[in-house]
Amino acid sequence: MLRMSKMTDYGIVLLTELARAGSETRTARELAAGTGVPLPSVSKVLKGLQGAGLLVSHRGASGGYGLSRPAEHIPLTEIISALEGPVSLTECGAQGGHAPTGTCELETVCRVRGHWRVINRTIQDALGRLTLADLCAPVPRLVGLGVPARPAAPAQNPNPIPTTAGGAHS
Amino acid sequence: MLRMSKMTDYGIVLLTELARAGSETRTARELAAGTGVPLPSVSKVLKGLQGAGLLVSHRGASGGYGLSRPAEHIPLTEIISALEGPVSLTECGAQGGHAPTGTCELETVCRVRGHWRVINRTIQDALGRLTLADLCAPVPRLVGLGVPARPAAPAQNPNPIPTTAGGAHS
DNA sequence: TTTAATGCGGACCAACTTAGTCCTGTTTAA
DNA sequence: TTAAACAGGACTAAGTTGGTCCGCATTAAA
Ligand code: FES
Ligand code: FES
Image 1 (tube, rainbow over the protein chains, first blue to last red):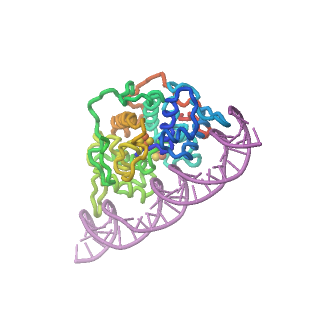
Image 2 (image 1 turned 180 degrees about the horizontal axis):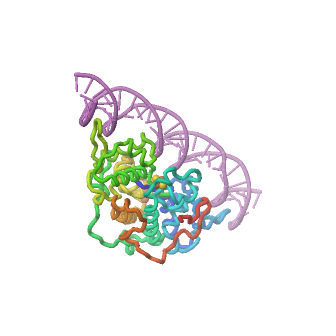
Image 3 (image 1 turned 30 degrees about the vertical axis):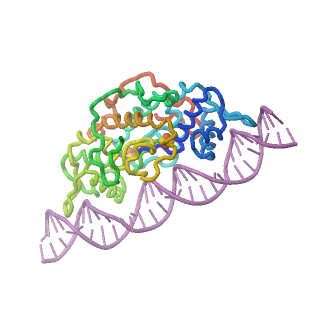
């Protein structure tokens, strides 16, 4: 599935909510109420985001969180890597800090490793081109994502496999 | 981290090994020996790949596995989705079959959902452009990945965050 | 016909990760 | 002084993942 953790998803939702507030600060409670994310999780995610330098926090009464810079300058990659480590499909090479022990025993033999670097870069690039401001735009029609109209989708899972999965990306 | 499961990684390694054998078939044991992947896991992965239609199997003595079509016609997306479900960053929309219950409670409120579709598509496209044959090529210098030489990396994690992570993708 | 190699289909378990909760500080405006 | 808010943990429960194992069906070859 290549999925992000749900916390990261939450983080993005919260950030967009926060971005909508402009330069105002919002309390964790307000954000929880505004998004539907359970408060304790909001708190946890926000803490992480603050630690990563994406948010500034004000403590004490009438405190809250605010973006540390304008949404246009917060790339999606930074959000994701703040919440779940560096963007990298493989755990093998390029493990930023999650797998400090023996990376992968196959590394010496593995002949695929080199390719992953390129693939990872591609994805990072695609994700880095988007900023928080883009995510806030109401219409899902984005531009400049590197893959404009390209009619020939190479091959998207024609053979559904028995995992009960289907290509139901509609 | 956005990481693929290790099984998927194994699968790719095994497939490349198999592709190197041309149209010959290989037994699970041979592949295990050739790649260093533990045999039981090889077996499991291979079974999955067979079920997905990427491999053909011959049972009985002197049986084995072979590619169901030339490596040039096996896109990377198909391999990945065969082993871990559809390629989709978010569990929210577009869950192919892994989260059959209540997808995401926020769906009604969430204003980011629409964007993920575009992002997912982008990644699928980048991955689908690569075939198994490409992965077998010895040199990691790939072409036609949509992001050729692009000198200006938009913004790659300038603010490393305390997860002990760094941009250490070298 | 017998034998042995091989894939098939599961069940199964231990270890790890994740989502979520809770509690005790510390800071700060009112 | 008070109460609202963040900081920083520890903690738990649930789920996922990687990995192992076994009995069965199939098939080529002896
Ligand atoms: S380096 Fe781990 S499988 Fe290639
Ligand atoms: S739909 Fe689940 S968080 Fe957006």
